[in-house]
Length: 165
Image (cartoon, rainbow, N blue to C red; front, top):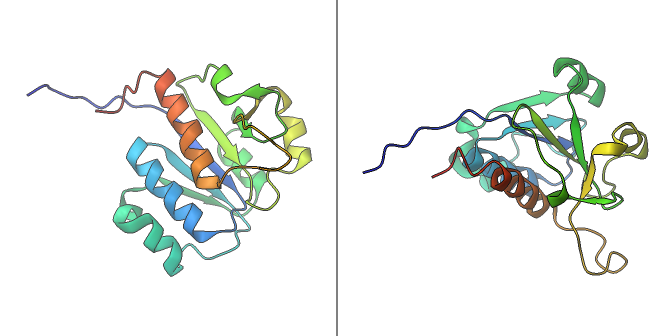
C-alpha cells in the first residue's frame, strides 16, 4: 500500500450572511472533505444549531474547522485583511482563469438572495471571479453549495489535489 501524507494547504471558504441552512450544511461537508476552513459571517438567516444545518452536514460538524464572525469588518480584522476572491456573476474573470496561491486562499460567496454587496465587490474588483453559465438573464446563478464545490475543486485541481487521495 502506498504511503500517503497530507499536505497542509490554506484554503478558506467564506460565506457572507448565508440564508439557507441546508446550503451551509452541504458546504460544511464539502469543507471537511477537502480540508478547507469555513468562515461564516453574520448576520445569518438561521441558527447554526438548527436541525436542517445539522442534517445537511451529517456528522461532519465535529471535523469542521469553523470560524464565525458577527460582521464582515470582524472577519477582515481577525484574518489580517486577507486577499479575498469574490465569487459573483458580475465578475469579468472566470474562476478557472485565476492562479490561486497556496498560502491562504480565501474565496467569498454572498448570501443566496443578493450575493456579495457592491461595496465589498468594489474593494476586491481585481479578485472577483465568476462561474460561466449559458444564459445569465434566465439562469441568474447557481445554487450556493454547488457554486462553492465548483470553485473549491478548481482551486484544488490547480494545486494538484495535493491534500487528496
